[in-house]
Length: 423
Image 1 (cartoon, rainbow, N blue to C red):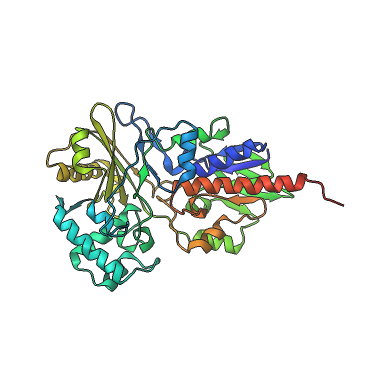
Image 2: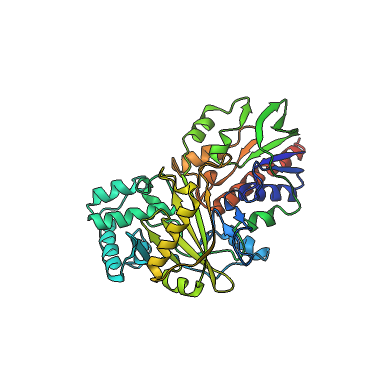
């Protein structure tokens, strides 16, 4: 074969699809039993045929590649939503989310209190703009926010879960990189990878152990076979890539980039409830909390049901491994917003941190453009893709685009070798 792709997430399936269209003989090796990477969906737990998105679950405005892919392939999208309103000024900012639904201490925060908190934060953002790499905790101290405003502002760091929300870099929340205008897929988010993988040779439950160079080719070792190819595309997370042996060893600049790119630690809680219309009216489209489930958004289903999908940071208290305790926390957040008891009919919790071949929720954007460039640069015939290498470092669209980038690298190389030199 000409190319082996490691990983069947969006980066891997989009790369393989494009390579196959270009005439390459491609095999995709996926270590887990699932397509989609961190867009994995569970189709067994929820009622009425609904899908629990265990990872990425909405497409943000500006992610035009995936939006167009959905349109071209008949993948249904829910109507456009705003996770939180614009304001307090004419634009979105790090204060905007405070104008949306907020639960603190198990109690819904009233509109006037949220407006006051957002106003204080907006004044501070205007007077003392945060540096992109400045953590949320560092900025609120430098800006001199009141304890209530500081606590509320820092809470939103858990939207992209890390070990501690206050240690998120400011660029994640001001002006904000997700949730302003977005679309949720009618089916699961892994539908995009499923469609991209149609007709491809995808081998699940096949972890790669070693990639070795032999002459001008590569041998890719799994537990059961060795595949020989001209090019290798690595789309696994930085954590999973560090587990693969390379012979010869990758150059120091590549290893340093891999070792220096952390993954956020956390997971996802998904609950399905009766009384969907009432919950949507009270808690939709999203609610931010100071509880274990730090931010949840809603997706209405049939029979007046609704799905609440929430992010959770791993703070070392074991909650991510206590499914019922976590789902009970999600219940309480919904009850705080609605004022009535939540009737949960199904639920599931996904801990991405403990996944052997993942190791976290998203690759954090540590090191900015220079780090992403090093992560994405090829080493001979070994090419690297995935969200950590993309222009959008924590987004599904960035992963898909990175797959197309490496496919273009390989196809261009193939065309150059096939073109006779001019005398």
